[in-house]
Length: 182
Figure 1 (tube, one colour):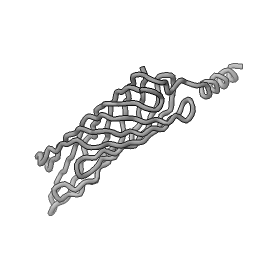
Figure 2: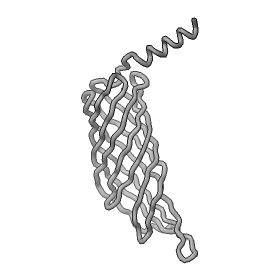
Figure 3: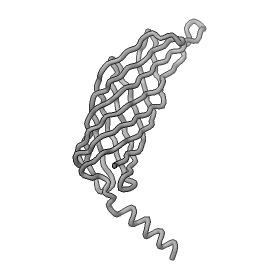
Figure 4: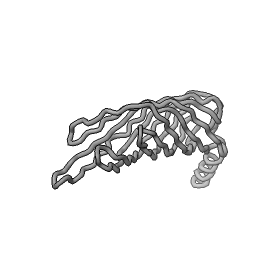
């Protein structure tokens, strides 16, 4: 009897609507992921990855349209090169603020696909052997796609892939996180 009750409760939780995509309201998202950067810097071909994180807050106007603003830190992209037998350390990092929009396509009561686009206000540091060589910064485009699965009425799990333009290069980020509705 106890096993049957657990199975029935699990079935009901999995199949009942969770009101996952309410019409309007405030939300907060926290993501962590892997950032990839391929760039040519001062004659070095940097191809590195790092752990990145993002926090965003926004407002959903309805189940299909929202705005967001947030902070994204790409971490440090470190790579060591051998130049005439001497190790040369190259380190690049960037972070900044975003503002943009999200378009969502609910596919049922608990699952949705989404696309993100907006502007990324960033700055960075580029070091060779611990000496700062450049401090670039700019305002560029970001784009992303992802999916959201409602776990409860207010909590969803998200996964997304985003690309951030950084002057003449771009950083790609694959992340997972939590989306909290208030």
